[in-house]
Amino acid sequence: MTTATKATVEALVDSATSGDDQPWLKRLTALQSVWILGVLIVIVVIFGALSPTRFLTYSNLMNISQNVSIWAVLAVGMTFVIITSGIDLSIGSVLVFSSVIAAKVMEALGGEGWGTAIVGIVLSSACGVLWGVLNGVLVSKAKLPPLIVTLGTLSIALGAAQIITSGLDIRAVPTVLQDAIGYGRVFGIPVIALIALAIVLIGGTMLHRTRFGLYTFAIGSNAMAPLRVGINVDRNLIKIYALCGFLAGVAGVLSLSQYGTTTIAGQSLTNLNVIAAVVIGGTSVFGGQGSMFGSMVGLFIPAVLQSGFVITGVSPFWQTVAVGAILVAAVFVDQQRRAASLRGGKARK
Amino acid sequence: MKPVLEARGLSRSFGSVRALDACDFDVYAGEVVALIGDNGAGKSTLVKAMTGNLDVDAGSLLLDGEPVAFKSPQDASAVGIEVVHQDLALAPHLNPAQNMFLGREIMAKGLLGKLGFMDRAAMMRRSAESFADLGSAVRSLVTPVGSMSGGQKQSVAIARSVAWANRVLFLDEPTAALGVVQTANVLDMIRRVRNSGVAVVLISHSMPHVLEVADRVQVLRLGRRVATLPAAGATVEQLVGAMTGALDTKSGASS
Image: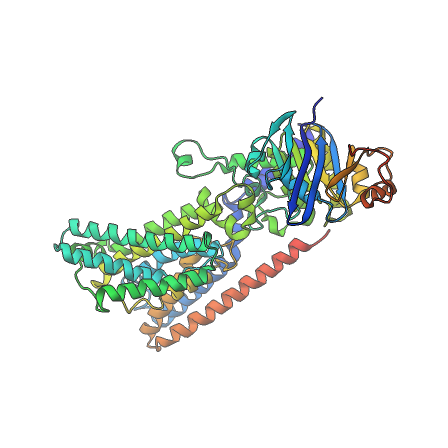
């Protein structure tokens, strides 16, 4: 190699390693994540100023964390799915189905100890994986649109849960689950929030640091790219939907622990709320870009609004309005960015 | 010296259309062969048949003189044959280094690698070296490929294929959408690849580019090779004549 090319190599490598150790990710998502983080901070500051003694308290912040925990677990899977330019509408129903199966079996086993609880945890997660694999196979092998597939499994899973229970919630949840996970605290932090945080950190690492995560971005960016180099796109898609289903199963256990009952009628908007959070956080529904950090910021906006409106005495119905407006605004910004980058890509110099 | 890749009598029909009709082709190490022909002459079909993308009805492929059959593009890749498709098949949201190593990531050592973590620094460095070797116009390894110019995208796609092609590199219309400077850059890359000893097959409609960079030209018409001629001394009129059949084969190659 000549000195000149050596210098070029150095320059290129420098361009890659200077500053952030994760620069491509920063470049891809910084704009929207930062913008939306700014929105969150503004909301917090406003409510903090309006009601400093009640909003910015430790207990209120812990309440908010507890409230977003289940959605956070779901949002991890949803972020993967949306980055592949897919969607999973079935998560709420899968959560219900998994928790119903787990509750039913735990009821039959009886007992309030960890033995029964672990059976429930394993069953719920397994149910989630099965629904996820079904979604993944229908999307990848049968080439059906994810919107249709998961709309179908949304219906089927919810209907099946209602058939099994005759539509009546099951309250047989072992007390250890409720005590340890539902109400438990470690160093004053809700256990359920710690579990969610661990899942978010693992999910974020998988998405942004591993080959599995890279393939997730590649599939959403241009499925021909991984196909041509011999990557098994179908299998990766099945894995991604299975992951999303698995996390819905885990969320089923968390929901049982938190509420002490199955929530058959209570999850009808969960899917849309989680999708809204992920999209607000800068993950593009067109695929190829997104970040776990953004999804988490997107999740806190509705939760903080809800809490703030309640505390300041504004009708909480406004929360729904505000979240909808932020969602539309966020996608508008995303579109503008895409258009700008497309113009950049087409430029001839 | 044997051709590094040779096709003998390849035939393939789609319904009643005979896309390849006992078609021959050969390319030697360290040369640029231009494959030209009018639309529908069978260029794409021939390339697909030689790179594991298409099964043929009859005929055989020889790699370094030995019979070989590719069941999939991965079989062809495994022996050092790569194709840069016209659509490039890059992932626009990924950076050049990620595109370069997509599907062939360098994994981290030990347990981390088993867990799916990659050695990004190594991939960045190897990519930078490839781009520098080829004189690529890529100036940043962290910019998503989607925001790059057409020439830069082309150079990423070529660099990716070159990195794995140690025998034959097929380029499908690499200059079709490029400006003058970018085209010159791509043609220069082609020469560098050839000089490294790899056989380059250039599929192009642009006769000036063909004459500028190719060592030999092989002309397809109606699914057959109708002419093989050295690029040196050939004229655009000659090539167009052979393509259209106006000048019938005086530089006889069809046997």
